[in-house]
Length: 172
Length: 95
Image (tube, rainbow over all chains, first blue to last red; front, side):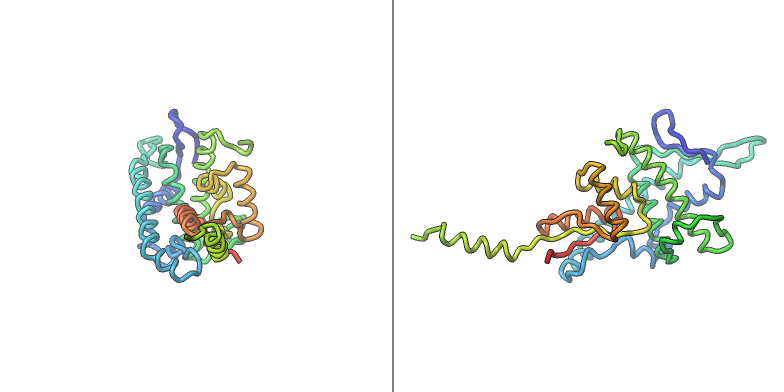
């Protein structure tokens, strides 16, 4: 997979392997439906004060969930535009995806939500997330870990692009 | 006729003593990327990158960082903002 900026400055991924394209398409799924237990992490309690907890459940959490759904809907729109790259004899062996820069926030939120959900669902610890070595595709857990790491890579690409676009950097 | 100056002072100090500030705390989370957390701090609190990175590293190394203190309503606002970005944050009363 190649990451570069398109002519109009949008983050663009090309030569995406079909397996990774499948992982990207999986971002569209509703985490509350797919991972009902893990998605609890997306709406954490704001503290221990009981009155605050009740207010949060009634007023803030529905608003947050609505916000996450809206962000995901923009990502779904972009994913629908992911297109095939035909190379040789019309065979599709790679995909390409351009993300409008003004959708980058929605992507970051949606990728983060899915990563958090997957980590919660599979009980990954810090040592799991930082381990080096070949990914284990033989188990659902191994695949989930690969998903978490792949989405982190996409997030890093987006963050770098946003930082450059804002003229940021460590010296800013 | 009352003398406002004499009555107002004790009331104000009593009110202030009861109204301890609330702290907004961000907790460590191995999932959120360091660059992402830095960006969120800049966005939510309007900090420069240097200050944002300092608090991000504090979260990473110490497990938590107090990122703001003040009135309850504003603390709620900040925690909600941080939850919008999926950072693990809470508010607690200062002791």
